[in-house]
Image (cartoon, rainbow, N blue to C red):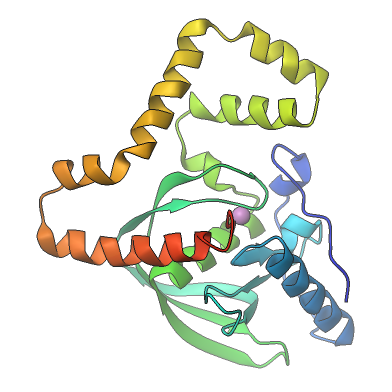
Length: 228
Ligand code: NI
């Protein structure tokens, strides 16, 4: 087994649309094992083949807190989706960023397992979110694509700056004081978001469900910054 390199935004290879897996053989199973090792080491709760620069329709996930629920989905297809849930998502390819994304709360998905056998499964909550997030990767889509136009260049600039990219440093210097102040404000809002949410959305039933899911998410995050 080997740990694989994870591509990071804005690497253009993350925009590749993956092709279906045609043969499930020992070579593919070795890749699956490497993807699990890479995901657990990150640590993360999901990883798509696209993120390790293999452009085949394949993803791994484990949303448990003790690495006890690994799933591999080959050529996944969503058969049904319903409900809406909003949760803070992160991504191993966009390290350090968490933003709210709206997804279906429940999905029914068909896929091949690691033996190449067709399976169907229902997923809800965090697992459903994770599978939808990874399936986006297979289509070359990132969770930052759901964010506002204004926010995306700032994420790109910050990540490039962290890697010492010279043009990114220039971009950052070009940012007005105003937009820097805005970033600070949005950080402050994020810190207080649970309180704001409680104020903004009154429904106790919705809030109870949401709180449970947020607990699941933050429990996973306690393992360290978690990405999917
Ligand atoms: Ni991701």
